[in-house]
Image 1 (cartoon, rainbow, N blue to C red):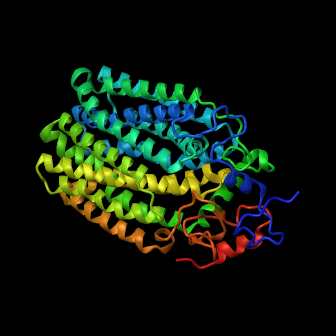
Image 2 (image 1 turned 45 degrees about the vertical axis):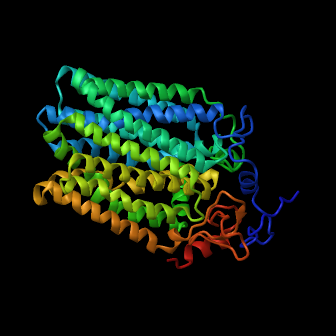
Image 3 (image 1 turned 180 degrees about the vertical axis):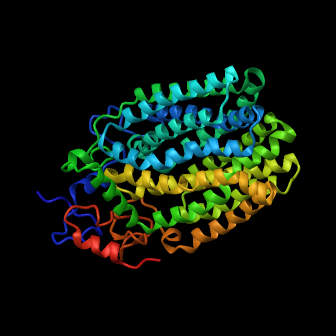
Length: 489
């Protein structure tokens, strides 16, 4: 029996029939998996509450970590460069392994991988707590622990993208709620870390961080996800013959290249990582902690958390037709944080600018996550999410490692002010790419069109989603040549 046709899907297929996996994944309610005891009719169902809690608690621990690292390493005689190296050890391993984590998540039990990753991080952060409690802090040991955490995070992260559509029908609302929870954690985490450092040394913060991963693992174990349906992430191995890991990696790369809006953002984002995000924590900590103390640095980070909370709430309400365009415009405010610290503004002004910066990056984050989760078909979502995460973070360790040398050469404040200016350049670059600027919403009905540019097919609704690129759908070799061979903006 032939599958029902979906408008716009006949382009590039001789029989005009929609592939079965695409029909199921786009015409069924998002996340209504076969065997799932609780289809996500509303956002705040049991599964989403558990996942929401897991992400919020884990983020609380993550928000405490910069304060613990800064206070702990500075207290043991290390400088801003050591903080950058410790963070770079995490980022290098995370960015280098997350692509393989995406393949594992598309082939194996996603939740089991996520729970296992959390348990590994419980052990790693427990070891770090022991080092700081005993006072035997050696930089290379802290870097090794960061590297182990990076590998675990690289296994965990790809599953986040595919889990959200399985547990929430309103993907943008879910992303906004999770971002808001993570922001509230960022608001409280640094302040809690500052108190723990004062009461129990940095070791107390690392012990608490290990506990947050334990809570996250428990919440994920309690999820009732059921068996994924054809077309959802995790079902790829059941829908088609199992390929090799190398073939899956290659397929993910082809699909990534076929989406100009995705790789265009990642290439531009690499510049932001080197010039702004990478040096931000080491240099702001080096400027604030020696003068005002770890507690004040915690308050500044809490202001960042307050801003991201507001940004997440706004992102839950605002539904732009062009998500990435709106996100790129909001991103302009992100440069206020490094610029304010670099200019030596009074502490209240720094906290205000930091809050605006947090709101800007939170709004962009929801727009980007929603675009990825709704534009990419389920069977390849984990791999493409892994590629975009790896690409977006690939230059983060470079920026972290260069923070110390750049500060020594030009001055930390000069580097921070330059970072604020670079945010304006990055925002303008994002808006200059048509495939990014014009990408339509994809949480409406399926529509065929040019996935390389994000333009809908003639006659398609302007706010409908783009069809999957021909490089993935079976029997669409003609589309593959058309998509990969076409010149794009």
